[in-house]
Image (cartoon, rainbow, N blue to C red; front, side):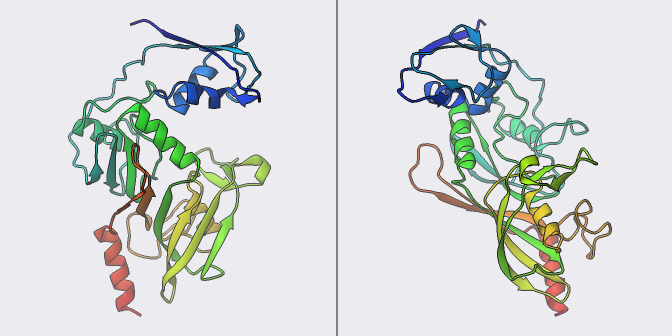
Length: 308
């Protein structure tokens, strides 16, 4: 297979970011794929390699994009049961169990959600040659609940934009130790990599991290715990877990940002992605998908209620 080459002339009166222009000009390719091509030197502006995705285009600039064939991955689908909540030609919505990693990474080269989805549908397209076919958002290993994957590149780009533009409404259920300062509220605290622990995130100053916003409300109170509903308005790594810890009420079972030993008998943290409200590709009205709390979390709640 040979490279595909596309040439465009930028003729808009106002300047525009290179990656924004390419997303509009090449709708069959995801934003992530196009940004990777820019980074890897496959995009030229007026004959010179593009400097960065945010490079501003001037009127009459000529843009050349060279797209190499996607590199086949060595991922092999695995016969792992999936709890499929919804599926059509563009997307698949899965209720992920706690303990399952979303995509292959160091130390997790099998048994991931991606392996399971490939085992279920071997024809699902790889996105830009990445070893994360269909992935547009993630859940932590010990977080259960709804996760959506794209089944083709057009759907992937659509979903990426929905999440990026904050058009997706996400609802999480969390049981925390103690209680937040107020029954409901909004947390705005930037998140970045922990300087002391490479695998951890941390609350950092705005200039050192990415903006992170969460809204919460109390669903139920117990003597030593509180059941909260969270609506993350951004999608930062470990966002709800960090914001709970910042509020002084870490999530039950969160050994990284909370108590080293769980206050309740639970072999995971109590965080569940309960709802997703989103407009799907080729549709005009939003759909809402729901996943009930898994049995191990319901058992914990029932015990707390019986002890009230």
